[in-house]
Length: 209
Image: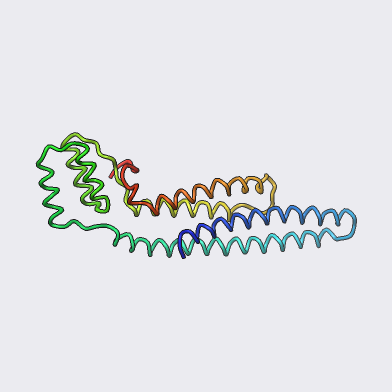
């Protein structure tokens, strides 16, 4: 299961909940009209509404649990993958960085080294130490693990928001959810794109190394 597929599943949960909110409202209106016209007993109308709500809630619970399980599995797999994406510090790297630490370097030179070592967190840390020694404030660096945590947080927040929205629309939740779906789609897409292009944008995005 890819993140794109999980994102689609989250969006579909929100769409499902919106449709059920609208369907519940229409069903309630129709049933109470029948009750007023004495075509249907009130107890029967209430039972139908309760069964409709119960079925929708059960589906929502199942989908939400499924999404969380997939995100957890993805996290475990992805953390192992991330380890393989980082570069280790070689003897040549150590020699180069040690030599660099003895020299007077410019900000531009250090920036070029940051780009060179953007897949090497230990080298990045050393470059920041060199920058500090030269009174140069370098762009900070975000680890891919931290960005993964941010991504998972956003995905879970939206899934939970959809799951927790009741289908009984007493406060305009259907229209609120429709608006939320538009905003959420943009946020999920942006978060996913940022994570997918992590090493192209890893510099300068966190407050500290």
